[in-house]
Length: 391
Ligand SMILES: [Cu+2]
Image (cartoon, rainbow, N blue to C red; front, side):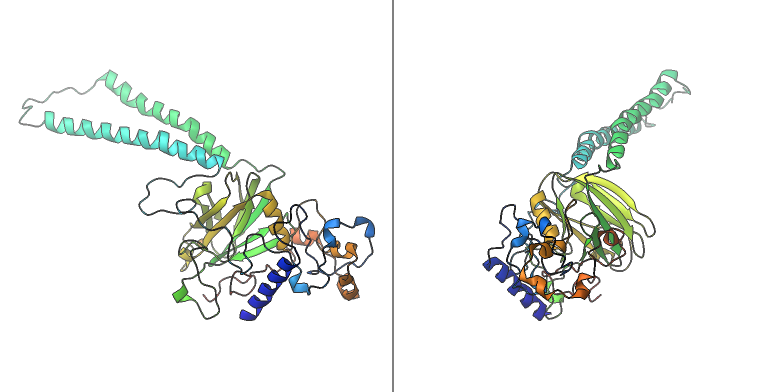
């Protein structure tokens, strides 16, 4: 849809020209006329930040700029080689960016792999020694020993002690992976579909997005956006990335729409099945900003290999900007619809009684009963919020 793209481009340029830029410290503009509601002149609640001159902009262009995208819709954050993505020839786990992941990687690298190596070499040496030393030519009269209490005690106790020693850090790690998130956590709901992921932020005004894999330039229809290296590696880049704050606990909830999928993000040490009819939950905290890639990890059908996951970890301030750009609210804030009304901008004159009657109900959004605000999928040629494009 080149028409939509040019409109969004023009909106981006206009916003940049009026000084409403992503760099405006603190004073993030409120999404204005996306829901031109509630003409009640509640001037007492006027937010200074809402006095941005948005009145002149048509409704579709009043949303603040997405801080994760450039004006032309390309992503600002580009992948870093070796971080959050596979590397040719690498052995072992990806560099971890969560505390749980670091503990698990330590457990794997420092305890498990050396232990497995030592045991394997020990058993191999015993076997070879027995084969060579006690072969018929070297040992014509075999021993008739049938019991040796000391050796039997050793070969029973030693494995038990090794297993107990492993179990202590292992159970601690398991408990840590399923520790419930604290109350201030950011909730991300990941929904597996054949064959794409959709996401909801139920605590943030019902922001929702749909992530489709970006295809190679040779595979797209005219007008569709193809993958570039700025988006990510082949088969891992998506048109809409999940945006999450660093240093803030994340509550991940997964479910499936059709069959079982699995939301897997190697750099977070997360792999959680997405099962139709139930909610699975885990939590994690991302330590480092960056771009991280994962994939569906449950064989879910013909295009199982083509439903990647991309997470953009940003500072909490940028995350809040992004939420507002998507038409959502941060917890404790009023719904964006209330802001322009309170500001008393000329845009209110266009509000019709019908519009005013529509409440910006948070409850409906939290319950998932209402459709979420259409995400501005400026970065893609796919129609807004549609999954499974052309599959
Ligand atoms: Cu899947």
